[in-house]
Length: 363
Image 1 (cartoon, one colour):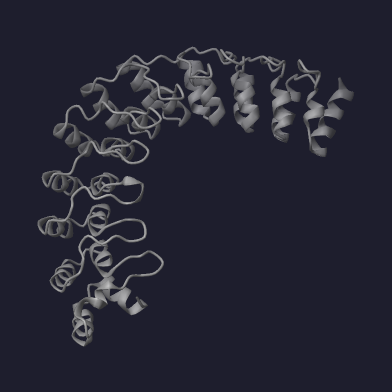
Image 2 (cartoon, helix red, strand yellow):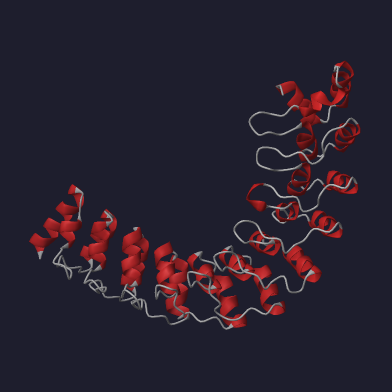
């Protein structure tokens, strides 16, 4: 397929195709050409750009309306993903498979749920699309709609199937987890008011929707989950970490302020499994602004984990220069852990080693 062919397909150039097919020895051989890089056929381009007249012309001349490109996408996928309602209706009227699968098992309805186009979704369901079908990750159409945050689409899907909310992905995540992580407050409110989610439900890692909201710094979402859903800030994940640990690990300063100042969470609380504090996690990730915040809240900079390591050990091991400087400035000690290893021994860069030596001389 040359560039003229592609351009004509995108523009819906009927004259181009009329001339092309009139010259061809075997009429529909020209319609079997595809663009090498993507495997797209003329019918894919026509639908993607909403060229209904060209779609009808290609169909009349023998084009395959269910041909797949290299990604497994069929024309109906293109119509759904690009919100081309007229092309979508034409394809469905012509009897194409409504729940056809592309690579990763995405149906046209799933792709439609990534866009704020309710009429496309309504049309697909009217023709029998199943919102309960799942992709390879275990997501159904409601998961996807909750990620995108269009509450009108979420409401419609739940009107079509009131029990659709009761689903989990392969890693145990519910649509509520998805909405909370992405800060979709209106969607979350609707789910909490109309579905049967339990407070503090966990995914396969032990994360709750509240944890997801806070690690992403969606404070309004967190407040909603706490007030409307009675979510508990002290719930632990599979590693014994609370929401404050995950917020520190993510560098979520606003969430930390909310948890400490509004919810009264101890900024130096240790995880159940390894006795790790939020300070340890911030040092590991290099979040120096989180270190400064936690120190300002009065945490012990020399608090140790189950292996006797302080945040200074962690910062040196991760080669985070600024974090090392901040910790030393606020009294961190260059002392050995349970195995006898000092922070200086963990440092692999000359800069950190020099900082530690200077601090040792001063003290």
